[in-house]
Image: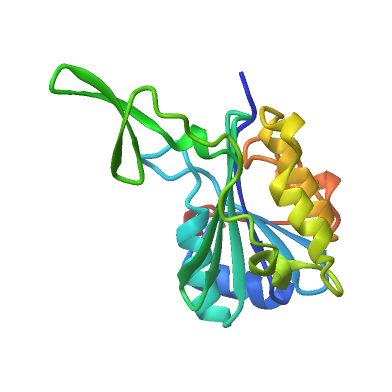
Length: 207
């Protein structure tokens, strides 16, 4: 089985992020990364296998007037990132366009769908990324952003089109100057003792 996780990067003060998460009733782990950079690892929702990092990122961005980056890694196949500001998504990135294709049967014929558009089953979809705009990720960089490094990490190389998605995510975080540990770990695989300053937010009835 591949690696799957969902994490949230918050470009805000750690204490302010903690307070906002408590006000929103969010549970999970909160980890200080560096100045004004915080990782949030919530558990999956009650009716989902996926942690709601996109929704929490939208709520936090509005509450703190900051930017957030919600990231999903699916079974080592795909990295999907959402850049969020003022409570809404302003940019998205997918590491492999071909992984987004849906296959179905219409009129007794197999077809492929991408973004709601129907294509013949033999259509050649690009295997590379989309949304690989370094400017969209630059606000999350520690210090002056290295746009060339960020662009290279988002783009990847032709030879690594089928590389592990988590490796692509590591490269993106490293290009941003961020520590990779907490941001590349699932809620269930997180061990707070390994991360100085990590805080676990629990439901009110467990206080």
